[in-house]
Amino acid sequence: MNIQFFSHADNQPGLIRAMKDWPDEWDDELRRLMPTTTNCKIAQVLGASPGLVGFRIKKLGLVRSDESMKLLYSDIEGRLKMGVNQINQQAAGTIKWIKKHKNRPAEKPEWWIFLGKGERMPLRRHLWLTWIGPIPKGHNIIFVDHNPRRCLLSNLECIPNGEMAKRNRNLIKMSLTNRNNWASPKGEERKKRHSLIMRKFFKSEQGIQTLAKRTELIKQMYAEGLINNPFRRLDDNIIAYYLSQDPEMRQYILDNEPELIDLKRTQLLLNRAIKQHEDES
Image (cartoon, rainbow, N blue to C red; front, side, top):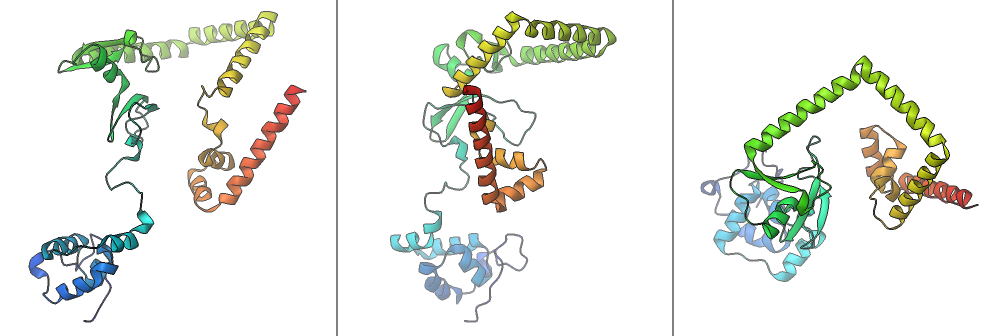
């Protein structure tokens, strides 16, 4: 048989996609290639779509052995199956502060609880369902003080969707009103007076003590891991941000310059150690 390689892209013209167009002589070639070749590679050889190859294998009743499967797919062993969202693969009961959709910049994060088997739900709904009961149709769970960080049962309220939309409109109007007030000449004067009062306070003895207590509290929270600051962790994305603020250049550094990232991380850690030594001495 004269073998010719084709692209297995779905939009590639000329691919055989219907079983009625499948030549009978391809069955012998399919039986020969199947034990040592993946479906996509077979599709490239024959010039058919990978889906049609898989359907023909099932139609003929062909089965790969366990040894053949391990040999063919050893490079992807342990990877998640297609269509499984990796962020959902958490232990049951895990709670994380995340967004539902990462690709929506305007969306705000909130607490989510993972229920196992790739399932999750907002913690506010889970608390209400667990301790109060079912949520009526057309109702939603909101935060009384509008602070999603305070996901406590005492801070939750179940209201109709229409009432929630009305409250959101009122909040938007209030926000716009406050913004306009602060942008007015009177607002500018208020900001200047407030800035002078705060500057005078933090230069006083009481203000210095307040800042010192706040600093010690933040250091303690960092030490206990209560503050999740990515700049303190110095992962690869943060190091790339230190090196360049151009998104394309950052991505290039992440993909092609691991040594540069390690060098910059070492420099930052050394600077931190020097500063800590100076503070202690």
